[in-house]
Amino acid sequence: METTERYCLQIINITSNAKLLNSNNISAWFFNNGNFNHHPLGQPGGFEWPRGENKTARYSSGSLIGAIVNGDTLVTVCDYTSEYLPGYTDNNGMPNGNGNPDYRTYKMVNGINDSDRIDWPNTLLGNSDQGAPVYYDSSSMSHKPIDYANQTMFCSYTDSYTSSHTNNAGRTAPLKIDVKQINYSFNQPEDLKNIIYQEFRIINRSTNVWTNAYINLYTDDDIGDSQNDAEGVDTNLRMAFTYNFVNDDYVYGANPPAVGFAIMRAPLTYTGNYGDTVFYCEGKNKKIKVGYKEINLGSTAIYHDDSWQPRDYRESYNAIRGLKNDGTQYINPVTNQPTRLMYSGDPVTNTGWVCPSTGDMRFYQGFGPMTINPGDTQVIVIAQVIARGSSNLNSITKLREATVIAKQYYDNCFEDVKIGISNNSQIVPDDFYLSQNYPNPFNPNTVIRYSLIENRFVSLKVYDALGREVAVLVNKKLTAGKYEAEFDGSNFASGVYFYSLYVNENRVDTKRMLLVK
Image (cartoon, rainbow, N blue to C red; front, side, top):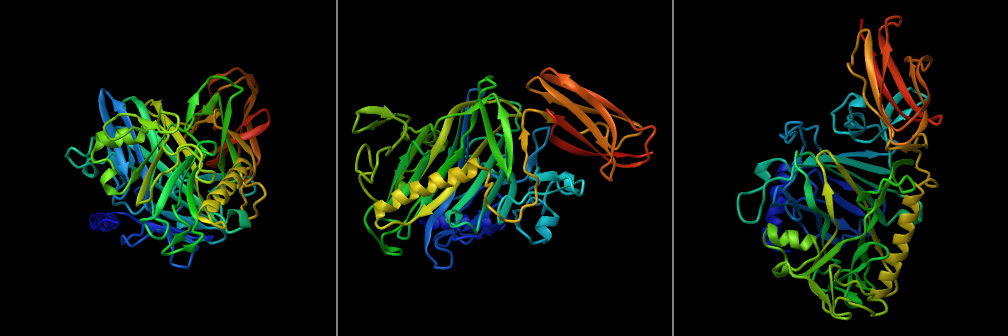
């Protein structure tokens, strides 16, 4: 790793907060500015595997997002350094939160009631308004933090600070991106001990449409010795991976491991077809989106050594689109056809286009083009997976097997994993939306708004602080659309009340309101 990169990582550590996710065989660093898998002091490797053996397989990881905005090419880069800072973008397009200790990396350990759990940043808990995941516990009639796994991390960051985009040819104006990131890992069963899951919620907080937008993952993998790696992409598994080019490594020895980024959920495109559904896992709950489908893996660009990497925003935008630095297309030497997916062959069977030589490798793996409107959110869920087989190539086979298992667990929302999570298992349609009442606090009247994407039987009920039903505001079949209901608290005592939206008799959301007389 270059000395300048080490220095940059030290500078990052001055303004960012990092914590280790280390519940299983992997110990990896995560920052609150989008960087992960690097050591806070720039030491070799921030992704240690196996944990405790001082052997590392990844040096630094992050993301790149690029788009055309009003005719300009804008790119936000997070690789060794980051153009993100902790915080968020307000409704006026201004950044806030950097330097505020509330905008840190939060880490919950299941069963431990420490300060990060107490301060878990969600207004439903009386804390910072960052949208960290919570659930409604019907037994206590209150919201609580969701333990996704044995360890669960959350942070929120934005690229809206112009100070993080230097004024030179290599940087652009901010896209005004807000990101909510969740990282989690399990210490059992055995199948999950070599996996880290990550969810990125990417929000367009500008007033501009992002056209030809690409969302891209970046990593500089060093499996032990950085100079003898190779890379590839498995398009069926949507996984870009790094492996040793030969069956020996200075650090790992014979039969070195392979490591990859596997896509659990890709960005979505709207189809309007109610038969198309995608769901995300919130702990063991399913969050469903109706009328959407995932888009295909769009690009991979792989670089040998520092001299190949993009040097400015134009070359970065080309890289995340799967193009050469000059914007021309790669040609698959096996098919002689243009492609945006480098090294899409199979190194195990030596078929198709495989990496022809070794070196210090980096890869870009992404999705696009997309149109992302102001206020829109795109979600990517990945699994970092590592595996070791009986040879360098057999490690790829084991990595693929582990990736299939990682996705099976995710697709089942970890239903069979016992970690003592107390959240109620339920299906939460993302397209049946319940708003916070307004005004709140109120006296004596308040309005509750909600929306439906499909025709459904709907109930809207109000409960007191003891969980007793005190009012039914709606109880009938409604067509798709936006609605509002008024609650009159004239005959009720001051205090906390809850209102719940039921769709086809299934509760989809509950919110809290305060009557003050």
